[in-house]
Amino acid sequence: MTIIIIEDNPVLQANLEKKLLNIDSSFDIAAKISTVKQAVEWFSSNAFPDLVFMDIQLEDGMCFEIFDQIKIDCPIVFITSFNDYAIKAFELNGIDYIIKPAEESRLKQSIEKYKGLEKKLQHHNYIGEIKKILTDASTDSVNSSVKRILVYKGEHIIPIDSEDIAYFYFEGKKTILVTHEDKRFVVNHSLEIMETMLNPENFFRANRQFLLSLTCIKDIISSFSNKLKIVVYPSSPEEIIISKEKAHSFKEWLNG
Image 1 (cartoon, rainbow, N blue to C red):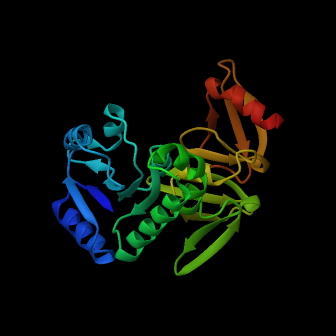
Image 2 (cartoon, rainbow, N blue to C red):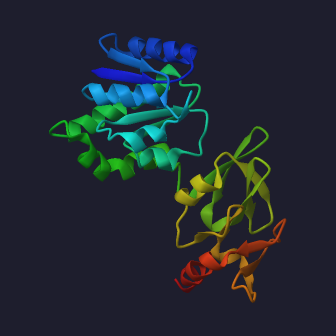
């Protein structure tokens, strides 16, 4: 099995190689790459490996810039310190998404996932088939649940049913979940991730700061500029404004 590692930190690069070889000493680590430029050059002049382990933030830019310059027809495991890019990653051949530090046991799960996908494929043109089963793969890795969300309060882990959620808002560097009973909890995902985890029939992304449930909306005030002011319960920490560009899709969402 041929693998390449794309990681800009030389220590993490070496550690990742060591862990992968601990999992299976027969793995062929064909290349270790640290920049977007090097990755483009390597993919331009070499056959695709079986699997790529790729960091998102590289020395000279985001790894997504690689895909802007060259087509990559092999599955990728993304390894990063950030959880905000999961959806983008799964749009780009991603079969798994690991938050650093990448433990050996977690890497082994990714390898097993790759092997499971490989068994479903009859040839090495991976992308067409992977895209068909990507929804399942991404659900396993990103969508911990669409019916309930786990929140943390001190040492306690609390499941919150999605029907009990009034809205989410982003404040500082935190995403806050507000229940219909006005209980507030910090969640470990960005609004972008929460938006993908919840039923779009019940939740609407009002703007960059708010993700609203249908049942929290108490009043809608239209302005001369065609923007909408949304009044919710429990009360929001600041005004919720929907732009005129989004107003039409919001009304369609309300109409079901």
